[in-house]
Length: 173
Image (cartoon, rainbow, N blue to C red):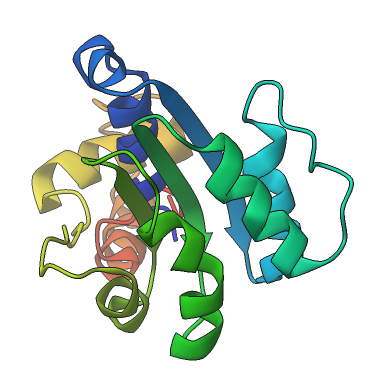
């Protein structure tokens, strides 16, 4: 966590050039609560004029996707953890058979296995932590309030050991 996956996805999602390429923009925050029915409801809730929003049956909800998701879309599934290919197939089935061509599913996850399950291409980005020098300046600012802090050598040595263990993770800093 804290590597910038959601931030990168947000930048893509809100980019004007990206928005110009899609008729419908959808964003679903998932986390560890992978529930095909709730996720499908969440997708439908973001589609204007959709009548299937209150249904609880997955088949009925998927019919709604087939009926109302007729234009080119970008769907972000943020913070995915589910590794069951069968559950993924059930969720994505109506999306894969959507009428419009050129739809994009953007998934953020901590697990490479999830990225592989959701993609029919090998297009994934592995985000590393911040570069060591940049992270040290950032960390000093977080803990000392000043990236140029040069005070107490003992505290700086302790901070450097902690910074090394955090492996460039800004969220941990």
